[in-house]
Structure formats: structure tokens, C-alpha cells
Image (cartoon, rainbow, N blue to C red):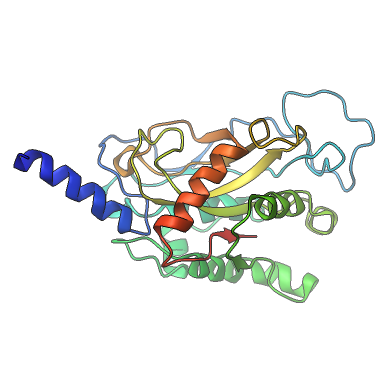
Length: 263
């Protein structure tokens, strides 16, 4: 085997060990908030009894197993120093459902104890989320809203997504449902060109009306730059079955961080 083949192979093996979203393709795109390419109606405090057909899902629409939370998308800086900032980017997306003035990515990274060389862990991301939200959440709920969990079944993952995004207490109290952050591996996810690295995403919409993982879908935001390996749209909708493949890969390939669901 030539040296030119050995080096990429070693690089890929090393990347799989990193709790980060690091890639090798170089390009740039705008930094910061991006327009939401998703059509959301206003939040409702209760499910609609007879929803009209729409091209998008309805916030709080429990009866048809669909739901969504309005969020804003974000682009991470497209440089080497920010190649492992997917956790901070996903946290910005999550916080945008709760806050009009979302902290910048460096403030989120500091709160998350993000290591630029490896990314961040689920428990640290959860602590950062709660630190930003506690001033508005704890006086109402009496406790932080988010917890990190180690979830190993698809049924429980779907239950968390559905319960949080259509959380009626949150909708009635805060005017919106609750986005969910997940840990995945990127190899089988769209836009990653088979690059394999640990990754954090924020799911903000779902359609479980088919009651079949091969047909049901989730929608999430992607924040990494092309340098980090991602070349795709800001928002992705994938089948639940495909999401579970990526989540199972994370559980299998990176047991060092067992907290794979933040909800």
C-alpha cells in the first residue's frame, strides 16, 4: 500500500474517534443566522380537531402525529478553528426556539466546555442549554427544562421527539414546543459524502403519521461548514429509519459519551 493511501486511511480512523464533526472538504458559506426555509404557522395552545392539508407540519398537532417548533438556522465559521463546533451550532438552533437574542457561537462554546480539537459531550451541552434557559424556565417550571439521556431504543427516541415538540405545557406557557438534540454519526447522513464523524443535530419537526420508520420523517438543522465535511442544505428531512441508523452508529462507535439524547 502506498504512503498516499495510508495517510487518508489513518485520518479517517482518527476522525472516527473524535467527538466532533470534522471533515476534509474546503469551501466557505456565510457565517451566523440563516433564513428558515420551512413554512411554519403560529403556535397553537391545543391540537387542531380537523387540520386542513398544508405543505408543512402544524405546531402542537398531536392528533395526526405531526409537530414542529419554529427555529432559526445557523452557519458555523468556515475555518479550521471551528471544524468541531457542531454541538455549539446545534445548541444555537435549539436556543432560537426559546430566545430572540441567541448567544453567539463562541459564548455557547464556552458554556459547553467545547474543546476545539474534539468538540463537546452531551452532558456539557445540556448544562450549557440549561444555563441559558434557566432564568426564564426555572421560575415557571421549578427546574431546568433539558436533561441528557442514554436511549437505546427507537421507540423511546420517537416518544421523546413527539412529547417534547408537542409539549402542551411549553406551548401554553412559553408559546412553543421543545426542540430535541441528538447525537449521531455522519457517515450515512445526507450531505456528508460518507465522511464519518460524531455529530450533534437539533430536531425541530416530525411526521410520525405513517406509523412506519421507513415512511415517517424528522426534520433537523445542519450548521457545519464545508470544511467540516458537510455539503448540503441548511435543513434536512430524513426517514426515521435513516435517523436511527445514524444514532445506532453513534452508540456503537463512540461509547465514551453515552448521553445521546437531550430533551
